[in-house]
Amino acid sequence: MPDHLRHAILGAGGVGGLIGACIAHSGAPITLVVRRESLAAYPRQIRLESPFGNFSADVSTAAEVPPVDVLWITVKATQLEPALAALTNPNSVKAIVPLLNGIDHLALLRSKYAAEHVIAATIAVESERIAPGHIVHRSPFARLNVSSAGRTLLEGTLDDLQKIGFECRFIDHEPTLMWSKLVFLAAFALTTTAADKTTGKILADPTWRQLGLSCIREASAVAVAEGAKLDADAVIASVVKMPGNMRSSMQKDVEQNRTPELDAIAGPILRGAQRHGIEVPTTKKLVAEVERRAGLVSSLLA
Image 1: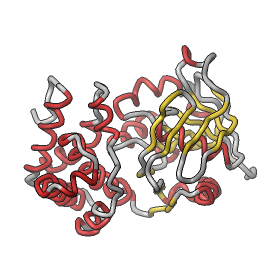
Image 2: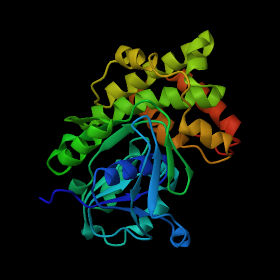
Image 3: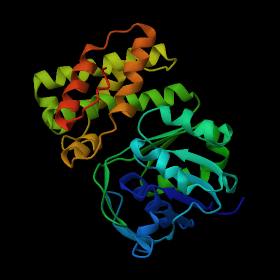
């Protein structure tokens, strides 16, 4: 195996830009896959402002995914299918690591590409692209969890990311890996967006705090029914320790009149609850309020 794998990022936004900048900073070759109309003007350096340090790193750019060892897919769930048009030769990619919110994207990717090449992974972070090639990492942490199926290929890359400041783990059980993030994310995204408040203001308000904790318990019940091994109390303990100034990407999407990832984040909980006969009234209430604030015509609750 070479000293550094070849990487590509499909979706050079907040998360993809953070991953790309840190991998490039570690010395590995990386290509940012961007829209063809943006290619000529896109910067050939990526700039990161982060609690891990401020730096710039050289990157390549392309309109299609080149031959690489690892393709990181970091687009919004709402943009996944059109973005995959850039993957014109799937056989030139050894592994696909999607870092999308939700769960359903794994089945979609495995239906299109060799299932064993799609490695489940999640990331917990607040990071934002404020201009092409300029990323601001706002949270004091970046937690990357990857299925143990990817250990042989990705261990060196995760070691490099840990040296920069990431918290990285390999997780043996895929349902636990994926649902552990979703249970946390659903409460964070739905409450901050429905209330249009930061995490600190949510936790300081008894009504919104209770809604958030209830959402965690509902999502946890669905997760366990779906085969995940997790404890709602442990998730709650981590949530109440979150930095008080954090805002969710869903909240920012609604604020900027973009389509929120409501189906990706709340959909698996609502559909799982229906399959298993689990009542999730708080989750439904929060979804309805997000839909109202976002001005969505069709309802996930229909």
